[in-house]
Image 1 (cartoon, rainbow, N blue to C red):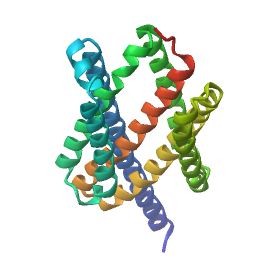
Image 2 (cartoon, one colour):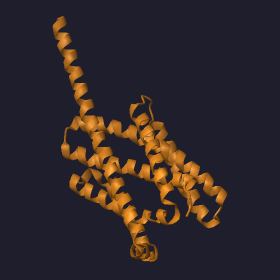
Image 3 (spheres, rainbow, N blue to C red):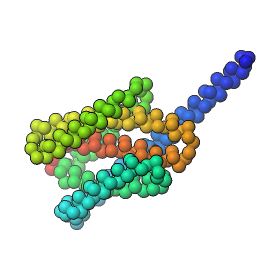
Image 4 (cartoon, rainbow, N blue to C red):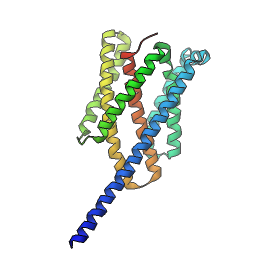
Length: 242
């Protein structure tokens, strides 16, 4: 093979790599777009409920309604996580929007506990922190596969300790859990972003627009949950109570 043939081959390989990177970037843009859209829906729903005495009474004054919404949230997350490969993009997007709406209804409770200024400032801090962590997760060349197992067990421990503290009501333990929650979900932002980057290249190779859109919604759900939980734990630390 002569020099010109080698140069043409290298150019073709480089072109394919750049094409994959471009498609992967579009995938991540979809992920962040859906996540941002869901956050807007959640914020609007929470604010709307907080401004309505009837809605507050209906949701937080009626245990049947409140726990019904909580169960619906868990059910939607479970279905989206376990059956995403068998869903169409339309069904997945509808379920994601519905979840973000319901989550907004239940998150309205923060407006009843914390001042509006501290909610806004903490949201901005969360957004800045999330952005920095997500960028790191995307650009890092490190292998983060082992981090996933560590964070999974840390999350399980956090959940168990939180349930235990419901019965003991220890303020000291609660503060420890708040800081632990910030650390765990900060790590999850990095890990999930890095995992989505790998997924972006995989779905790019498939070239199926329907599959790409569906998995973008699933990725948006992961980052949305990371953002919301990071925000809640930071609010517990930084928020001014009314």
